[in-house]
Image (cartoon, rainbow, N blue to C red):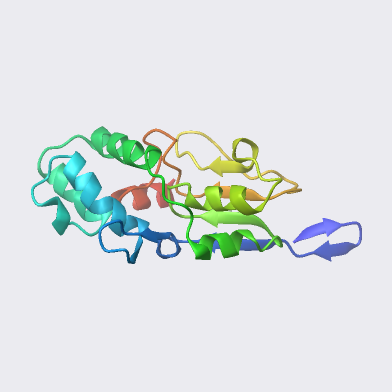
Length: 177
């Protein structure tokens, strides 16, 4: 609640999780979550056997680490995959972006599909000014006054080097910090 003189205004807030971020599978043509889309591609990029058998990024990361793989490779390969992703935002994200009462949107995913949706439907949205991501290694806080849409990646985003949550161990580290 923001205090405006003697009146109070409710600040509308949306919290987005991984199940809302979907795209069309290029093989089947069906809608799948980003997590399910990324898993086999990440497994293949990391050289894991039978990449098509992986359905979550968490299982890929765990298998890679158990095979003696580098933690940094997971982040680097995810960044590479997402930088080359040309999928448009799904309808659910576009619909959410059209709700202009949401001034703060908190995302618990590391991709930028919601940012792309906001860019598509809100002419005043500029990611370089209105996209923030939490970094466990440095203090990042929301501005005191929100005058425009703000997208906050609470578990980091894929552009924050290795400071974004990919698998369950990362989630615990972020929550503890």
